Length: 82
Image 1: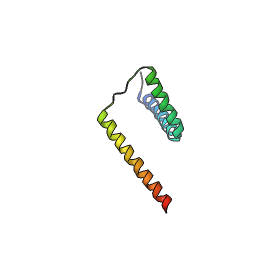
Image 2: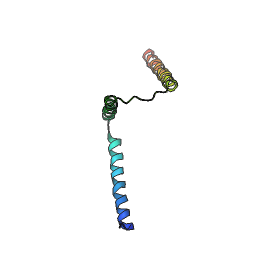
Image 3: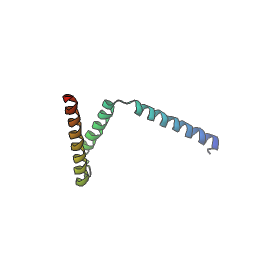
Image 4: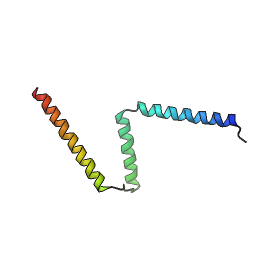
């Protein structure tokens, strides 16, 4: 039987593990995160898992991305003229 003290110690250990995982994730570089994401995508493709795609949301995201690209390019070109 588990008493309150053992239960509290167990919870503290898992809290410490969670803290360590958070710290490790904060210290990851963009490259490391990118590699992990690509590994997950390759695994999903190998398992023949198809993402559920909301065409309307995808088009909205594409429009936002294109808008950001145009703004960025306008800014870069504007700075080049100064």
